[in-house]
Length: 268
Image 1 (cartoon, one colour):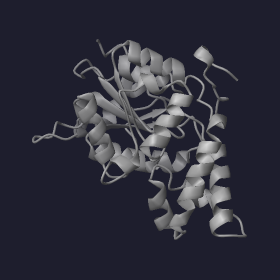
Image 2 (image 1 turned 90 degrees about the horizontal axis):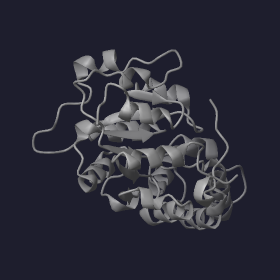
Image 3 (image 1 turned 180 degrees about the vertical axis):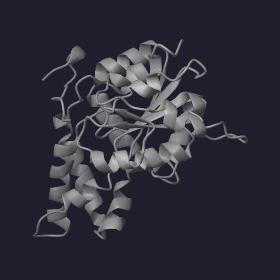
Image 4 (image 1 turned 90 degrees about the vertical axis):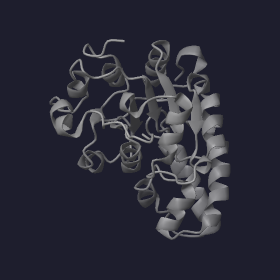
């Protein structure tokens, strides 16, 4: 279906670094207390973090599974690439999904698949990009964050050009200060480089920044960059695996991020 300003909105899905590194947010000895979740596992606990917490000044997002529901297109592109390069047999997409968040060539190496799969995968991803929807609530959430002066960035496992092309096609690119792909840093996720690069462009202190992702690699990258690790559960992520990593915050809808940033205890 179509969202505001002609954007395609998809159906709802189921249920830092300076010479002296800043203190983690919340501090380690308070993290368990202040990230306590309600019975639904939402962000209520962190939103209620006491008035000593500084306001959130920036949010770094993963792309696939967080902003856009690209799994159907990803599956089709992967299946086509596997058939062209490997040949007959079932494409191991379920295993591929377990490594999402990483750069495609890194996934091929981990899975022992031919790196030559990248070219047809990228070709098909571009060809099918018009079928990728935005998750319900994402355009509104981004608009409110931007309107309140929060800096926005994307740090994705995709290549930078492909990520920017998709966001431009969806009418969302203008909302982000920077969109960084895995090909634009020396060490992709789970290393912190991509988040640190986003922090540098945004000019945001790690203690006032959160990273929203749907993969274990996102949480690891966030934590090693010194920012709060926020788990997004509205896509097709493996919820049990993600929660086992003990994210600082768990969100089940995009709108809950607004409470994290602008909750009553956080005065801007």
